[in-house]
View 1 (cartoon, rainbow, N blue to C red):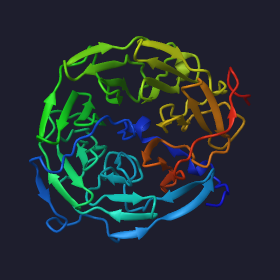
View 2: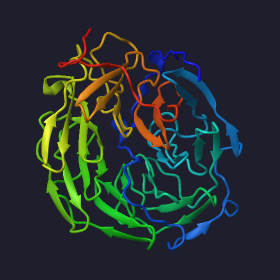
View 3: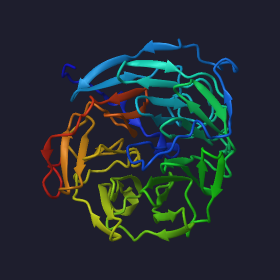
View 4: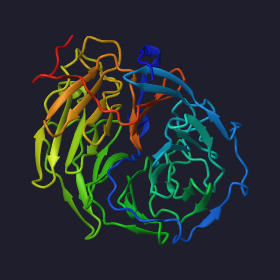
Length: 426
């Protein structure tokens, strides 16, 4: 692809659905050993011919509208008929699937149902999913099992009435099947795949779904209440849950051992963002985000937890302290590439002398930051995924135009190393 820059003006600012209204669901390369789910589960299959479509009139398959935006990345326009906020976004081995959510207003009303869409970056085409058994909801969560996409829960309307519905979609067969209802509700569910189960966390607690038996398991309550929204990560043996909410209160992180059904409280990190995002990098938990003005600063801070020693280390500063502007501190996106934590700071002030988005990358091996671009083609993004060897970053644009930013296959960040104390400021 030719290298040319895509101008992202102020009207293209991407607002995080996670900070403004709820949490994220994540799917990435951190899965442990996986098991097949298609043959042994007991749900009822729903073929594309047994259910009628609801509202969308898009063709079954159609090419994407794309723009080259620099660094080898592309901006993919999401069809306006498809919800892009509070939606389950699930990365499979070769596609990213969208289901549920609501219209571009990012409100709780106007939930849309079947069919969802899938985008294939290799063919640059959108594919409409067949209708399924799920009712329209806002903010469902989803996970890829390596054979099926599991969709669970969500909200039925502005009163945050939780939905317990669960279903599975098999991309190769093009069929849905209804699954056992989840034993917990609550707004803004988030999920992780352990290799054999989908762990789901909401304000009501944590449960695990085994698609091979179509059974749910509930766990004891954590040592502190979970938040209206939560960040979670699966380490291979523990589910780490970090409560959060739109009030940006600081909560303690907790970890669940699902085998013994026991919880532990994580130690206090030295740099503790109030509106954090986190990733697990095979042996280390990394948290990063912004401090609100009432805590005396609006700078971005982060820490890393060595799970073998249970010891935290403060990350070097990646950005100077800004003049001000508490602008959606939780809108950042952290994406693990396998070598770097790619950071799009989101819609809060970076402290740099730039009116354009910034793109950063953290190397856990060297404990250093790279300023990939002070004129990032990716925009002020909200969520990151990996699909095969590509990176997807997505967000909702205020103007109502939605974008997926897609990297070339095998892309890795490069740029100028940020000196101690952060780069030069304003």
